Amino acid sequence: MTHLIRAVRAEWTKLRSVRSTSVALLATVALTVLIGLLSAQGSHTGYGGPKTLDAFTFLHRPAAGDVSVTALVGTQRDSSPWAKAGVMLKADAVGGSPSVSLMVTPGHGVRMQAGPKKEYLGDAKARAPYWLRLVRTGHRVTGQESADGRTWDTVATVGDSGLPATVRAGIFVTSPPVARLHRDGPRRTVGSAVPTTGRADFTRVAVSPGAPGGWRLTDVTSPPSGLQGPGAEVPTTGPGTEHTAGGTLTLTGSGDLGSPGIGGVGVDASSDMVANALTGARTALFAVIALGVLAMTSEYRTRTIRTTFTVSPRRGTVLAAKAVVLAVSVFLAGLVADVTAFLVATPVQRGNGFAPPLFPRRSATDPTVLRALVGGALFLALVALLALGVGAIVRRTAAAVIALFALLVALPLVSAVTTVGADTWVNRATPIAGAAIHHTQPLVEYVIGPWAGLAVLAGYTAAALGTAFWLQRGRDA
Image (cartoon, rainbow, N blue to C red; front, side, top):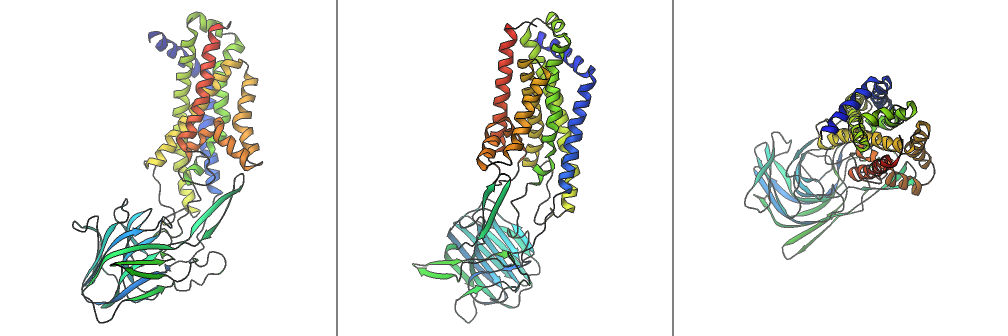
C-alpha cells in the first residue's frame, strides 16, 4: 500500500505538471456544456391535441344535497397505464360539465380530479382491488381511499367543486389510446395511437342518499375541440357496455379524462430531456481519449518511462497509480461538466416548450437525474481508463487514438445511418453502450439499460487494463 501511495503522488505530480492535462480536462467540461446547450436550443415541442378530454362510460343515478358514492373496484384490465376506473359526481351526463372523480389506474395508482384542470395523488402503488369513496358536504367534496374498506385515508378535499345541488353520482370506466412505436430505421421512430377498451368489475356500489330516478348508462363524449387533423380528437373503440351478474357490475369504455398534463393526457414519453442536456458527453470523448492515451504513451515517446520504472520497479503499481489519478481527475471534471450542462440546458428546454404540466420540472437531486449525472461522470472516467489500457498495450499515441476514435466515435456514427440491426448491435455490444447511463426515459430507441450499458463499458475497460498489466511484466521499457 505504501508503494501505491507513493506512486499515486508521483503520477499526480506528473499529470498536473503537463499543460495538455489541464487543456484536456477543460475541453471535457467546455464541450459537454456547449454541445448540451446547443442541443437544448435546437429542441422544440408543443402539444397539438385537445385541451379538455371528458369521454368515458358512466353508470349513474341522481343524488341531491350532501351525498356519498362508494365502490370497490374489484378488477381492472391493464389496457393502458392510464386506464381509469372509479367513482364520480358530475353535474350531468354531458362532456365538459363540472365533475369530481376518484379513480384507480393500472400504472399510476390512485388519482383524484376536480374538473379537467386539478389533480391530486393518492396511493401511487395502489391497484385493484381497491375501495374508493367521494363525499360531498355542502360545497366541499372529499375523496377517500381504502385497501380493505375499513380504514380510510383522505386523498384530497375540493373546496368549490362547481357542482349543482342535484348531481349524477355513480361509477365510470375509460381507457386512452396507447402509442405503438417501432424503429423504422436507425435513430428514427414511427408510431400511431391505438384505441383501447378499459374494463373494470365493481361491487358494493352505493349512493347515499339517492334521489328519485334509477340507474342509467351513458357514453359521455368530449365536447368538440375545434382542432382539425391527426390527433385533434382522442380515438375510441365505440360505445361502452354494462353487465350485471351476482352483485358485480362490469363496465367497459374508452376515451380519456383530463387535460394536458392532468390524468396522463399528452404526457410525452418520447423525449428524454436529461439525456438531451448531456449529449455533449459524446463529443467530450475526443478530449478524454487523448488524455487517457497520452497518460501512458507520452512517457514511451520521451523515454521517461525508463526513469519511472527505475524509481518504481513494480510496473503493476505504476499502472495502477496512473489509473487512479486519471480516473479521479476525469470523474471530477465529468461531474462538473454534467451538472453544469444540466443546469444550463434545463431553462432553455423549458423555454422551448419542455415545461410543466406535460414535462415536470426535473431537479439534479431526483434519483434518475442524479444517476445520469454521476453515472455520466463515471462513463467518462471508464473511457479514460480504457484509453489508458489501450495506450499501455499499443505504446504508440497515433495508433491508440485512431483505434479508440474508430471504436467509440466513428463506428456509432456509421451504424446510425445503416440498419437498425447494426445500430442496435453497436449500442448494445461495444464500449459506447456505456453512454446509456444518461438515459432517464424508457424510449423505444434505447436498446440497453443504463447500468447494463455501463457494465459493458466496464468489461471492455477491465479487459484492456488486465491485458496491459499482464504485458507490462514481460516487456522492456
